[in-house]
Image 1 (cartoon, one colour):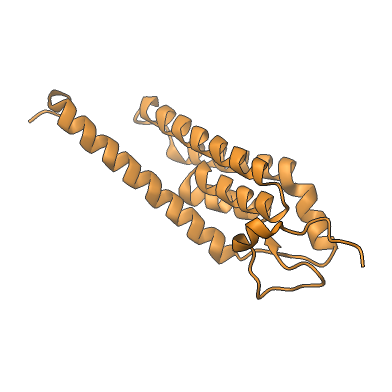
Image 2: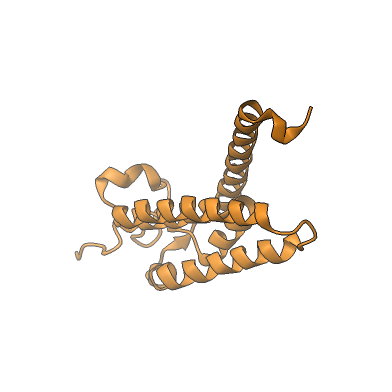
Length: 162
């Protein structure tokens, strides 16, 4: 029997759902739609986490680490841009831009691998899990912003008035 080219290395088994065995594909991958949904709910870091899970499941741990670093940088840039935009700038345009941008990135980087996985009998991962990752990403960004605000309020009380 030929070895599965998508098999996860033993070190990454924690990211594979062992209860799923579909036609020799013991894991599920997140689609570009899942990545876009998680990004919409929780910033680029959430979408990049899903892409990292895919890379880990495909045995490309280094790319998984790189995509997480890119997600952190993209989220920080997004927050910085959000602070300098005019107050009347429509938030929906901003959200749509980074959501569709992440969809395109996921499609270009992993679309072919996900399609091959599906064609060989594999399945996509749960949209509920993608939703959970998205919400957790949003919560993490909110906690980070709160912590930064508290540090700034303590360090520079004059900025915030009395």
